[in-house]
Length: 286
Image (cartoon, rainbow, N blue to C red):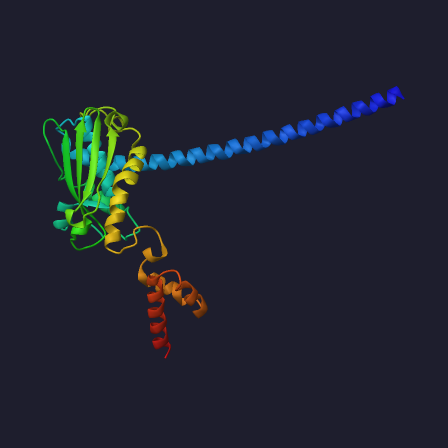
């Protein structure tokens, strides 16, 4: 009897051991898969960050050609990066716009980046003003590339003041709009390691450009651009009303009359537009 109990106990322990081993193996497999997914996510994130830095560095390389015989301070190098990021977000120097620089195109209200606009602006000598030789004050007049016509609502003024190791950057809309400006404080040493003396690679001068872009987009350029486009009754964010009207009418063609009536309840703009579409559609059918 004792031997039978002992044998049953050994079998139970063996089964328990196999169950624990199986559970641990399953947990290890899940952890391994989790680590693999995490590694892929990190690598994809790094690739995205690297592409952002490369795009900013490409613009900086073009602009630095205009200062080839002039060493730039760390503050000046940082302002050049601010200048490039502003262009990438849809702002164009007013001088370029007023002189009808060939190739510049209007952006849709829901879009900010236009590669051709960035390349054209970065291949032109910058028009911003700064105090020389101290390089503690920089200013540029921008206009948002949302219209082919000059409009005060789309104008803004970028000002950068250097105090110690920091740069205070402010973007102010045109006074006629009575809109609030935006400001942000940048640590110069955080983004610019060395000043540019044309003897070291440009990549060695800058760091964390992806973080600089996020800070400037979120705290400076995008909020001002949204307020400007809102005053123009445009749709500054990706939305159904932000796509061209012709495309919205194409969408209406695929909807039943009952669906159009339901869609009209979303807002007054869509209500008026669906009525107009229905009227045109009925006239064409007749």
